[in-house]
Length: 110
Length: 112
Image (tube, rainbow over all chains, first blue to last red; front, top):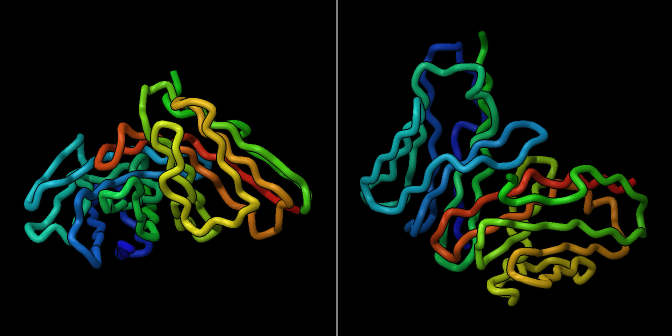
């Protein structure tokens, strides 16, 4: 099965600072998904990357998939309290399921 | 309108009871899923249905029985609940493999 490692496990950042989360796969990715989860809420879809070298941005969040399609990074610029939560990367193994990493808990301090 | 909705959101029940969680999606998707998130926030697939047919059962105990009466609904019935079943259960749907999966808000199950 597809194994995903996320790093760091958690991080605390000062409001206004940038942060980066990494997601590494043991196998080539058919698709890589990023989700955000706030406590007591469901998963909010952020972005999906499928092509090697692909990069997508939405507001202050940018995600990249490397050329070999085995690693992705999520970068938040000028973090705000609304960015706090758990970020999960999910790998599509082309068999009707996503395998998820263990998540990265982000805390933004005012 | 909520795209993927599941009920109840919170459920506290005693060991040995039988309970159901319902899920409905109004996105017109063909594929629906149940995921389980444990206390360490690790999210794992349980079941996947495509056009009402079971296509993935990830070594889930027989006490868990999904039922899909139509493409828009996938309910999860759990028999003889155990303490270890306490978790958050997420329903999700997508157009199919390789397409974005949209999740419901989760159902918090606590077995006491």
